[in-house]
Length: 140
Image 1 (cartoon, rainbow, N blue to C red):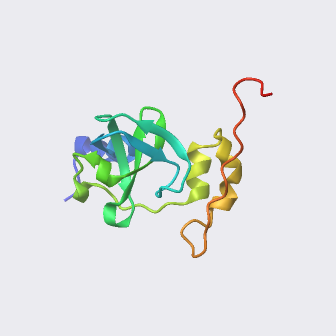
Image 2: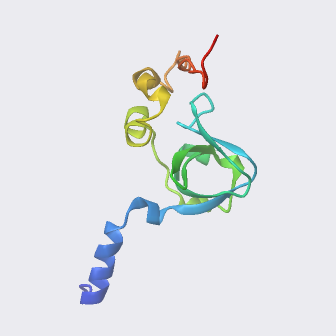
């Protein structure tokens, strides 16, 4: 049976919604680090305070690391620090350093090492050293 006019338009509008509208809300259980990828070796994006509300876009296989947003911050948090998640509602997603960093981290100092991070997850991978810190004030 074909869908009637209003229902058809509603379904079409639903398909056009941005992914952020479909994200699930969770809350941080404690202060957590947000990383630039699904592993603690990735650069630190920021830290979030306990009880910060985040949107979960998806998690890696096994729901270990989740792609989240809190305000304008986007990154990865280990799922053990998130509460109120219904795993059956969260998609399993893949991670690509180059695509993810192109989308979210072009202005970060460690973005210049993006290609060195592309081998993450392969045997023998070692994270590149962090970029040198520039002093806030003149150094002597």
